[in-house]
Structures are given as C-alpha cells and as structure tokens.
Length: 462
Image 1 (cartoon, rainbow, N blue to C red):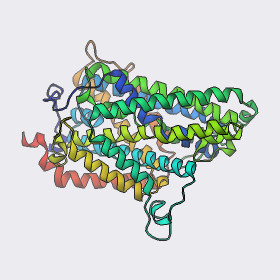
Image 2 (image 1 turned 180 degrees about the horizontal axis):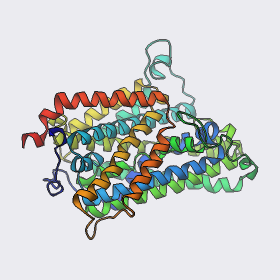
Image 3 (image 1 turned 90 degrees about the horizontal axis):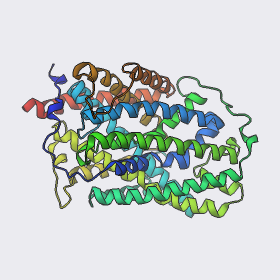
Image 4 (image 1 turned 45 degrees about the horizontal axis):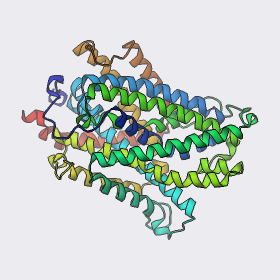
C-alpha cells in the first residue's frame, strides 16, 4: 500500500545540508542536558511524598532498566540507520511512511511537552526564590484564575532559548555543556552534604504505598511510570545524525553513556532526599533546597536554588534543538511544508523550523497547565518506543544481522519483547484521560497525513 512505502537504508545517506560538528562527548552532554532537569529538582520529592516513598529509588532503577533497554535498541538503529530524524527515520525504513509519521508526531509532542514542563518548572523556581507576585492574568496558565490568564515567566525563557537557537548549533552546545558541568557539580555537593545528615530511620517504612494499582495508582511501579519521565530526552541524541561526526559510533556511545550517568545521579539524589527528610514532607516544588533548609543548611539551599534557575535552561536548550531537527527531517521528506527544512544564515540553520518551534512552545507553555501534561508525555513516549522495539525485530528479519563495526543488541527478539512488556506494565498506570488524549492525537495526526502528507511526500513524487 502507498501509505507503507519505505525508505531504503542505502538511500538514507542523502546529501547532507547540515554541518557535522558534534562528537560523542557533545552527544553525552546533550543527553544529560535534557534528562537532568525538573525531574531531579522537583519531581523526585513529589513522587516520593505522594506515590512511592523512599522506595522511589527502586522505581528509578526500574525506569532506568526500561530506558536502558530502549537505549540499546536506539543504539543499534543509530549505527545501522544513521539518518536525521531519529525514531521517525528508523521506522520509515522498517515500517513505512504512515507509521513513521505517527512516530514523528509522538516524538514532537514529547519534545514540546518536555520543553513546556521544564519552562514551567523554571518559572516556579524563579517565583519561589525571589518571592515574585504577579497579577493573576500573567501568573499562570488557563484555568489558574477566574479570567483569561497566561504564564509570563516561562514564556520569557522560551523566548530566550529561541533566540539562542538562531546563533547556531555550536553556540548552543557550548552553552549547554557549560551549564551541565555546573549542574553536575552542584548535585554532587548536595549528595555529599546528604551523607552527613543521613537518618536511616526515615527509611523504615520503605514502601508505604506498596507496589502499584492500575490506571493512576500509587506504589513502586506507579513511581517508575512517573519517573520514566526523568529519562525522557535521551532521544534528542538520535535526531542529531546529520550534525554528528561518525554517527555510526558516536550516536550509540552518546545514548548509552547519557542514560547510565542519569540513572546513577537520580538514585543518589533520591537516596539523599529521603535520608535527610521524611518522605511525607517532600511534596514541594524546590525539594533540594527545602531538604537542605530542613537540616540547617539554608545558605547551601539558596545557592542550589540559584544554580537550578540557570541550569534548568539546559532542558529547554536540548528540547528546542530536538524539535527543530525533527521538524526539519519530516519537512525534508515532504510530510510537513518544505519551508520548515529551508536552511539560511551563516550557520546553516533551519530558521523557519526554529521560529515555528518557538511560537508553538510559547503557546503551550503559557496556556496549558503543567499538571495536564506529565502523564500524557510519558504515554506518548512509551507508545513510539514500543514501536521501535517491534521495529528492531523487523529490521533484523528484513536486513539481517548488524555488520562488523555496527552496534548489536543482544538476545534479539527476547530483549525487545521484554522491553515491550516492561513498557506495558508502566503504561497501564496512567489515567484514562491520558489514553483518551492519546487517541485524539493519533486521530488528528492521521487526518493531517491523509489530507496533506500523503500527497506531498517526497517518495510519492519520486
């Protein structure tokens, strides 16, 4: 059928219009910048307090295993199909155009939502630290007041990041690397401080909420479903193929390295938080600084709050980069207007895609409540990750084993099947409204494809 027309691996290395600037270390920092953000500064405390208790450490380990399995799958795809667009490009080869389009839409929704959550978390930190009180009309998204309202401060950070995007990839990556180094150093100081105030009595009721209940419950598995969001962002590495030196080697190394470092950091931070302060007291937005204030280290808590304000920007930088690269890739294939893939300026930047990303992210961040986004974000991510797991099995069936020098996932098809089962166990913990929103999204994406993308496809014209 026409909607399942495929790209061929031999045709993936099209003429590269972008400049290859990134190496493996750049990609690791790209992943760390996207994964270590609001999750470590905000969601860890709230998840421990309301969902899993100190057993959130186990939740994070489960989520890390699930993400780690997918990181291996990404690594093989990246080494065998080092094409711009990440999961969208991979599924274009193994399943065809329409499944790839759906994956691309899910990918974009993930990046936009993660960017919005990051900007909102940044805004909350700024308001809390500087005790800012704005008029209701500019102090929250729709529904936060009795009249029309918009969240101004997060919009400002989106605007600043969009301007940075016009300065080129190299400038963004240098800025991101500097902020990530500062962030990691700050978190290391917190973990060391936590060792001196560790109270093992806080861990006596280690799993107060049990394991889990389906569809929005509490417990260790529900905590894993929530903290799965902490690792969302490693996919940003996969969309950078056309700007990466030696992508067959650099992409797998960047993906696996970033996921491993992130898992270790989140477990250490959660152990310190729940060891310093009883989990019931951690339902606050600035949980790290709060924990330090509780044990008398107010000055250090204030320093970390200031650092958090600046370093949370890394999530916005990396997500904006990923959005632009994904829009560029889909547009280049004709499934979105070709204007989005036009390059211009000294640094060969997709300026139309950058401008579009900034406008859409501003609207989403300023108007949509953050509480409406988290579960939907995770669910969208799990769906296309399961598509990739099935896709790896089909890739092996259609194109054989990886060749020498390419990354190889062990125990195929057992490992992809296991990753799908883990993902399903996480997915059933999301509420029904998230599943309904997912259905509406897929329906809308399908309508757009059959009314526009199908007829403007580059492959169709060929």
